[in-house]
Amino acid sequence: MNVSVEDMGACRKVLHIDVAAEIVAPDYEKVLKAYSNNANIPGFRKGKAPSNIVEKRFKKNIEEDVRQELVPRFYHEALAEKKLKPVAIVDIRNVEFDKLNGLKFEVVLDVAPEFKLPKYKKISIKEEKVEVTDADVDEQVTGILKNMGKFEDVTDRGLEKDDLASIDYSATCDGVPLGELSEKCSSIADGTDSMIMMGEPEYLPGMVDALMGLKIGDKKTVDITFPADYNIKDVAGKTAVYDVEVKGIRAQVLPEIDDELLKNIGCESEDDLRSKIKQQLDDSARQREKTHLQNEIAKFLLEKTSFDLPKSIVDQETNLQAREMINQLSSQGAPRDHIESRREDIMTSAVQNANNRVKIGYIVDRIAEEENITVEQSEVDARIEQLATQYRMTPEQFRTELEKRDNAEEGIKGEVRTGKVFDFLVENAKIK
Image (cartoon, rainbow, N blue to C red; front, side):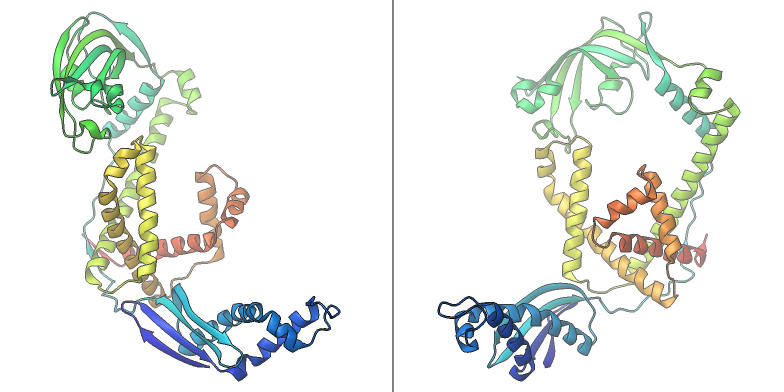
């Protein structure tokens, strides 16, 4: 077998493989014999026709079967001979085979990049400590009470923050009723006894501030300017004029923190509630700080390392990033035409994210090799249990789901190793 390697640019190579006829002859004869033993040819009993007749009749089928068997075998032998470890097979092309001339074919493949690591120990990064205060705990307690509160009618004052306002409204844009711009504008064109929460988020940008302080029966004309990325494309970047009347005001009444409320949320006392909230906030703050330090380290490594990336891997990651962005927009209620209008921005971000993720992945792998950072099966099992809890499944159920996806457990192993590498880098960093 003759094998030559041709460079085709960044991380891409072509294997030219040429296998002599005498090497593949035994395989050809083996396939021919199998056809001869099972061939039904008029004038002969099954399996008794001469091989030359069988060969003539089934020549294309025999050659195709031989190709299917030989190409993978010699491809792997060629990789071993040239000591290549592909990250992706891009194409197998120009396959030629017959028993007189042997086998010839080409394999286009991408390989991992070669690069020099920067000095990754004692990276200088700035710490951003987040202290959890009593005010933070108070805010969380208030949030819990709001979720359990109720609304009561108010008639003796104007609208305040966190009230629920009942309004009638109608809108025009450029002198035309907003509903006539398009069917998609109907949801924001007019309404009767529509309920608006006096706080974030708001579906009509600026309406809450404009209504603040108005009393029942008050009327007001409000100019609403929609942002350029508003999810209804027909009004994005435009200003609409709203005629509004306040029909009702409902104030939120928070419950008392009593034994029944504490029992319902699984706490023994108010001190126990505040202690649990404080612990959750502390955990979140530590995780944010850890994420910040890791992001700073990743930023340093990306800036200090330059190398080409395998196109096939970047393309694959780009598609994944784009799908995640589109799914996120869809889950937030963005209509299809809005997502389509942002396709160019989405793809630009996806390409940038993909390049960074693939690049940092190779850097992390190299650091893991340099520092002999490995992952034990027990660590993978522990991560699987964490993920199972997160998705409200048993570890067995989660493993069953993993088995349905190719290399899913290997992906979790890689995730654990990446985490260990970043822990190592943080431990060895100069934190200011």
